[in-house]
Amino acid sequence: MEKKGLIFDIQAFSVHDGPGCRTNVFLAGCPLQCKWCANPESWICKKHLMFAEKMCKYDHGCRACKDACPYGSIVITESEKPRINWEICKNCRTFECTGVCPNNVLKQCVKEYEPEELVSILRRDFNNWGAEGGVTFSGGDPILQHEFLIEVLKDCRKWNIHTSIETSAYFPEEIFLQVMEYIHFAFIDVKNMDSIAHEMGTGVGNERILSNISALKASGWKGRLVLRQPTIWGYNDSDENARQLIAFMQENDLFEVNLLKFHRLGTTKWEQLGKTYEYSDHGDMSDERMKELQNIYLKANIACYIGDDTLF
Image 1 (cartoon, rainbow, N blue to C red):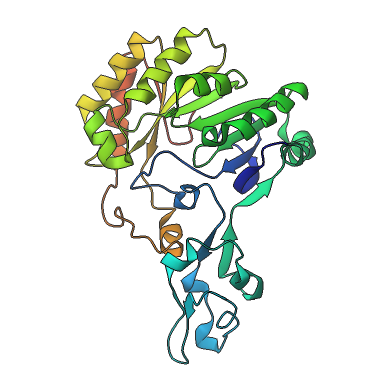
Image 2 (cartoon, helix red, strand yellow):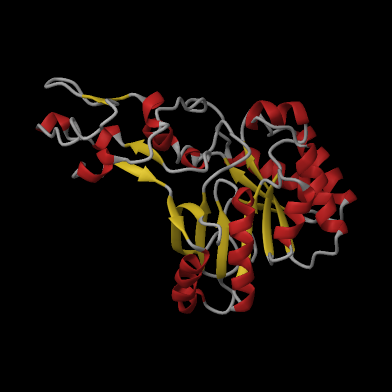
């Protein structure tokens, strides 16, 4: 029986996540839990609930969800907004509340797909991509669902679909290389060159990530690799971190890096999941500092792109 994939979003007409116009497929589940993550709904590899409290019309008299939950997770009175018991909700499998909410305030995040179902969507989008486009697998981290992903990638090869991936590379080397065999273009994140700092920010050290990048280069892989760093003030914006990454890149014959400027576009998602966002009031990078970091890489003959300026 084919392995089903858990996907939390599919976006067509993307132009920043690989060559040409692309369809982005966001798979659920991630081995990292970055404190600044823009997609915290991607952390767990199962269906779960999101609650867009600010969109709720309880103050207009809506009580549609009050009796929908058979587990007693939703509490609402005449004068108060709904309160969600997340400890109960994290074990829910039925999501009755999402079916009655008229404003999509309560919504189920993550949907199951068969491999052929996803490939049919990609084939549908084929005419929108142009000569250089294709599909980008993102997340979360798509390699966490490697069995499903490989099945889809095999079909992509069959239909001559260009494949890109955005990954942390935090996986056993054998699995990582097996997936990368089917990938034409890759962004691999290196959040911090200091393993202790990396673990403080993401929950895991960086040894496996760096080892897998080296193994990929040594394997003779023919694709294009761009290292990526979400650049955060006070975490990984130092000259020393840049110099260490440059040294690693030179050792592995790598010459492209993409520095992403810190943003808070995922803030509302943290709220909708009942989580506290630690970077609500710090981490901002100035344009001037981003340029200074870029110049450090350029002086070392490393092509360094800021934000969406990656050359495809």
